[in-house]
Amino acid sequence: MPIIERLQLWGLIPKNNSLKCKNGHFAKLCPHGDYADGFVWRCRQWSTTKNRKKIRCDFKQSIRKDTFFNKSHLSIYQIVMFSYLWTENVSLSFIRKQIEIAQQSAVDWASFHREVVFDGMILRHEKIGGVGKVVEIDESKFGRRKYYRGHRVKGQWVFGGVERITGKCFLVPVERRDKETLLTVIKEWILPGTLIISDCWKSCDCLKDEGYEHLRVNHSIEFKNPDTGAHTNNVEGMTWRHAKASLSQYSRKKRFYAGYLAKHMFLKSCRNLNLNPLNEFFRLVSLLYNPTTPEIVDSEELSTESSDSEEVESEPEFGYF
Image 1 (cartoon, helix red, strand yellow):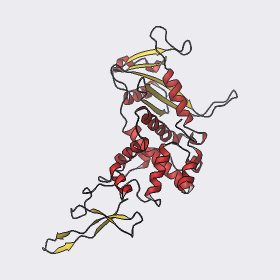
Image 2 (cartoon, helix red, strand yellow; image 1 turned 30 degrees about the horizontal axis):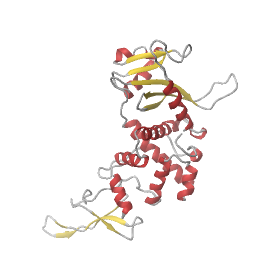
Image 3 (cartoon, helix red, strand yellow; image 1 turned 90 degrees about the horizontal axis):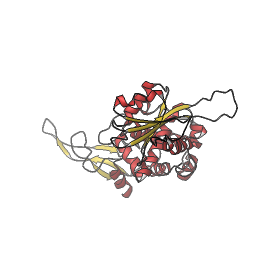
Image 4 (tube, helix red, strand yellow; image 1 turned 180 degrees about the vertical axis):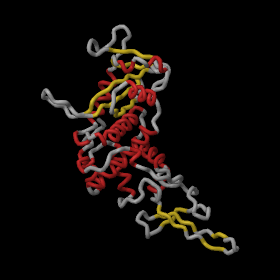
């Protein structure tokens, strides 16, 4: 039962003595040939009714109920292998061939995985920066390049920041680039007391009034402020280049941006913190799909993306970025 024990260690299925039947007894994990996974939660303890009649509990429950694996026709092994390859950032077509699943199943499970990291990296995120720390902020437009004049490029504006030394970052798609929007994002992602370095936006002129220190560099004149040493090379080079490389032309529909940027942030965070991507991914899964406190997960609240067959080639071929 090694894989079952590993799933319990990851928090993906209930641990022993944690799942109760309707009568309040702890169910036991038992071998059962009628279930595809070979195991089932079962209780056969005796209970006493109000009429003092003894009855034996016949509680049975699939090990998948209320878990990340619920209602899937794939084997648990296939799903775990999908997660391993997905966190290694190989192409979706490669994953599909390796674990022998249908194209639509691969697309659906890639979407489920992006929902997990979106929840972990966006909805449950930790703020970066703080007193004594420096965060570079900038904006960039994601979209296909056009090499002819007179054409307005359609795309998605993304606002981001990188904490120096640690490399912790955030990337947030924004519909507007006004002062109120950018200030809301900064307050959501950056701790007060942080030294923020930005381009010379008028939108950032109020940062000192909001509890932040602020240095500016004017890119129309210089790439580094000679007086303060301020520059935004980290966020402009590393973050934008890598993030854009992780978004192929197939994933550049607005409804997919949040999920793909969340994946980029997740893999980058794992590298910066020297975390095992698979272990960290399953940690996030256990938070979203907690089998001991089940709740309905509404994917509409996690992202606005939907299944689309053209996503099959949307992952980079190999490597992180």
